Length: 82
Length: 443
Picture 1 (cartoon, chains in turn yellow, blue):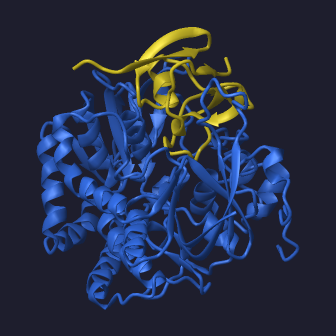
Picture 2 (cartoon, chains in turn yellow, purple):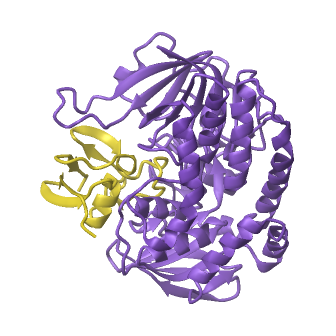
């Protein structure tokens, strides 16, 4: 089944992801954690529905975006804490 | 400010039913949700589904068609973060501006006026802290399902689905349909509690059919009752998940997995109701037979009034929508009463076993936003004391995750809800009526 793809930048790498994906899903598929906790742990999404804020990342220059609530768009730039 | 006769907050099944009923009765209705599309959690929109999952879609498609034909207006991708005056909500769109717009990155804020408000804010998963629960690769079961619908590719992954609640089997069947291997399903409730619940299901053919469908999909999957997780395991010196330690109280064993889905049933989202001043009882929004809260102009439908699932949400939503439009609801009251009974059975069947409250070790994090460990909390006198002394519950989730955990672990009640309901930029707070601190607050 041919998929509609869009290209997003994840920490500087251009990655093709299915249109309609959430940013959180794109990060998980790329194996990228979203943020570093205040004590230094790498964190990935927990709740998947916009409640826990573990999936926060910088989306198009805006910090603390809940990536599980944001759908990818062609040309979107996403940066995670590393 | 745009003015509506009825605003419905939350576009899951309850909100969809409410908005449809009110709009079909002739009201000017706005349906608002922070997700990009309607559906809520159980009818979450997402990427195209595998064929195996499509048969459950008929009811959703019918409801969405009726909603679209109802004349209701929609505002998706907006989160309500304040109710600065009676009849007024403030909402923010956190993202979604096209990347080439000059104001990209700037949130859009709007004021919305209503005569009647219907809260259909749903529920979230309850998480209980245990060693390893903060590892990447540990999700809530519903969380994992939502992420998979959003495009998380789980093909070939070995997934353990553990915790409590009817969601476990649904999620196991779901991720399996997407190509994952479900290595086990473990429900903490013992058989003795599940039997009366299963017996009650016989009066509900729809629910039986669904349960049989899940069972058929999971024939080869080990299903343990009275079994719970004690730790998520990672590779030595790394945070890569390798498995989960499970116990049945006498025996403890390791189940290898790539991903762990673990959650302990659901807790209602009552923050907006609390902010508005609706009365709560046992943590649930108190409503009458017309779904009216203690505030004359505010109704509530679905999970915030009691965790009871899809069918209850649909009938309560329809009642709230009709009643808000001044229409009779008598023909729906029989179904409403039956669903209330079902909710009680559900709560009894999936009651937490006390063993779950001693899983956290002294160094186990309880508050994930501020990384507050169990040892820092166990001697605090209550929620406010913990917030002041340890920053527990002071992070971006505002206690939505650790609040349910500390309530289960220590019996702490969250004392107040204040605006903004979610973290917003300071620019979103610069308006008349914003009051960061309530002067009435006690404790």
